[in-house]
Image 1 (spheres, helix red, strand yellow):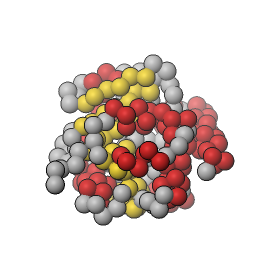
Image 2 (image 1 turned 60 degrees about the vertical axis):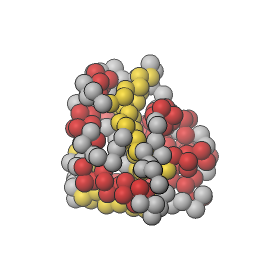
Image 3 (image 1 turned 135 degrees about the vertical axis):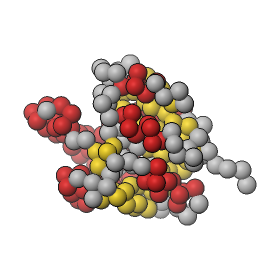
Image 4 (image 1 turned 90 degrees about the vertical axis):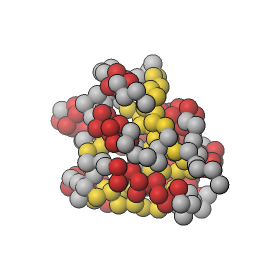
Length: 213
């Protein structure tokens, strides 16, 4: 049986300060055949930083279309059987963490996984303990995406949309604990006031997805 191809897709919006650490790890994972960054209308050097990695394919979206549209663009560009979705602002990510997410899918134990932070930072651990289905760290068989509606319209609600629809298909993701992994908070990126406003917009986009389910 031929080896299944794996593509890592990283949606990114104004992540020049963080994305290199994630890409450095992905480029060292032997199971990954393709790394794709979808630069979602960034105003900073996100695209340039991603392009500094010779093996990374950078897709530039002229305007910010939201996380759901970025993931869809990356999936459409991928030449792979298995898709790995990772956020661009992860802290503490290692090759081992990526392999933990991928292994159950590669081994055909299950069709999808979702990564849950543990022991990284109290703020992100607490958020994922309350709502693990909102994690952006996932591995999924590409064929399952054909059954997911509205992904390009869902913006930050994409994780809720994906998780709920996978469960409806009987393909509930396996939770994989990502020990000592966390991510940069919006308040740290943008300052307290702007970061809080951005967080409220994110929550609204998530809540807005609930009636679609």
